[in-house]
Amino acid sequence: MEDKTKIRLTSAEMSSMWTQYINDTISICVLSYFRNYIDDNKIKEIVEYATGSSQKNISLLKEIFDREDFPCPVGFTKKDVNIHAPRIFSDTFVMMYLRHMSILGMAANSAAIGLGTRPDVIAFHKSVLKSAVGLQDLTRELMLEQGTYIRPPFISAPDKVEFVDKQKFLSGIKSRRRVLTSVEITHLFLNIQTNQIGKALIMGFMQVAQDKEVKEYLQRGKKIAQKHVDLFSDILKKNDIPAPMLWDAAVTDSTTQVFSDKLILFHISAMIAAGIGNYGVAMAASPRKDIGLIYASLIPEIALYAEDGANIMIKNSWLEQPPMADDRDQLSGLK
Image 1 (cartoon, helix red, strand yellow):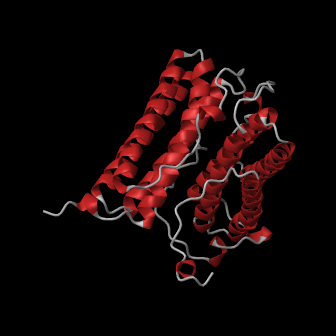
Image 2 (tube, rainbow, N blue to C red):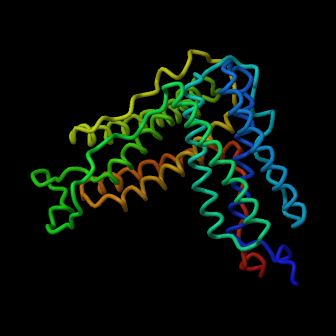
Image 3 (tube, helix red, strand yellow):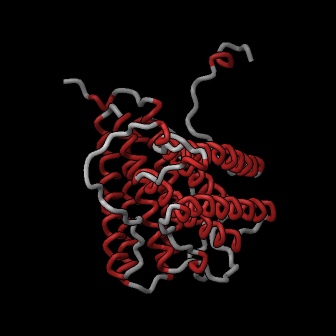
């Protein structure tokens, strides 16, 4: 029987594994810092679980890369983190951060499994998905126990099945706006939370970043995140739906350098990419025209912000290049 692991890696498999490797090196740096200052043993155990998962992923990826003579990415190392720096994030924020990372991990690896073909690659992403689900369970259970878990809003269950019979269901004209659907509420809630987490993370990073241009870039990101939180919260409030609480208090006043500016910018860029994806899904799931238009207007703003961040990384030689297609013109000597 043919050994299917001898089949070349597809572009999708290269992409998913390369991205997973980079993200796991970031996770190890961030989690090693968290683990060094957390006093709560239950939270520390979850951080250690997440760290062990990332280390296992790195080991498995290196095996696949070695078999394929695929150059192992540089990613991020101990040089990019000062684990002995004072605390900048609260334990509550660490739990929210881990929970958010598990959601991103579940989404990315579910997609990778759907696009994968080689058994060894699919087995790898199944393993990462299982760990991400485990992390989600652990954080949810502890946050519920500690009273820090914020549930999505409650609404009344419908009395009966109904079908849409009027075009005003799609309308976003002010005088004809209908109430929100449960799907729209869910996406608004999620995007408020992710922007709040992003804002708190940016606030901490801004205090410990070294380069002035990076600090100014982060300041701009903080304003964008707050603007988006306000927009989404306003939609919920106008429909008498509570918006999630803010997380500003989750950041201490420490200014000691913790992470390299390279790690900070790459981490923010990864979160922006996830945010753009969230907005695209939310726009498609929001039949009310005014809500869809809000998402559509915000995507270019954060895409431009991401581009400016990439330019800073390129200028400083911080941006590691992902696998690229062959340039046939260059190979033919036409360039």
